[in-house]
Image (tube, rainbow, N blue to C red; front, side):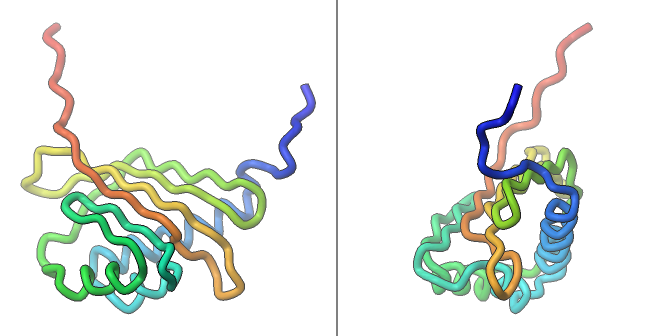
Length: 137
């Protein structure tokens, strides 16, 4: 069956670029490199970051949040990271994460856009859910 999509999904070189940007974001997040986090979000009023406790619209709101956030307990373990690219310039990255001492499962999604200055996050969402209860045998 022939595809009617005007773009290709998961071109290997594009996935590699987004994965590198995603990993750079993760290092910056867990080591509190605020300047790198600011760089990786598109600078503008339409950029959105919905967090576990905050709804931030626009780069200025996102920057203010980052400046006021505690640098403690930022380390986390990622799992089930899925990066999907659509054509050369658009991608989504979704992952689950856990933190030491936290029983809930964290979830994060990013929408990435390729711009002349590189890959930038245009929308992000972070949320928590209770860990699934194990089923009795």
